[in-house]
Length: 113
Image (tube, rainbow, N blue to C red; front, side, top):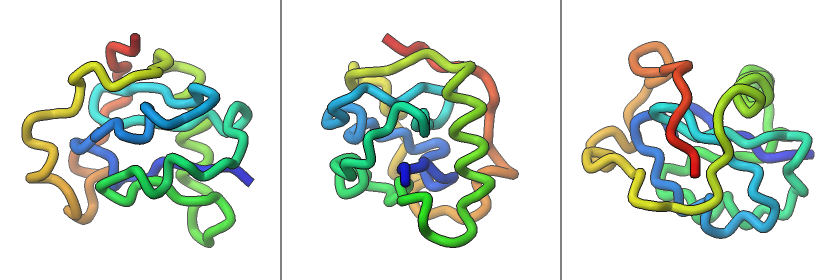
């Protein structure tokens, strides 16, 4: 089992999860984070820290797309290990919005640290 980040993170990117991850398995895109599934130790401390409820265990049904996306982009985006003020100022405006992947997803990398 591993945890994955879903589209609920897009345009929110709160980064509370990054601060608690003991193995630094988060990677930063322009407008969302992903988890490297092979680095995740399945501890689950990140899941309750996410205000957008974007982090889920891959054992939940229907998350195959997100597991693949997390795997693909964690290999392309820079590692992020701390929240250095990268949370967008308008994050709360996008929290809970449906269909964010089709509307806003960007494959561009974030800044990392």
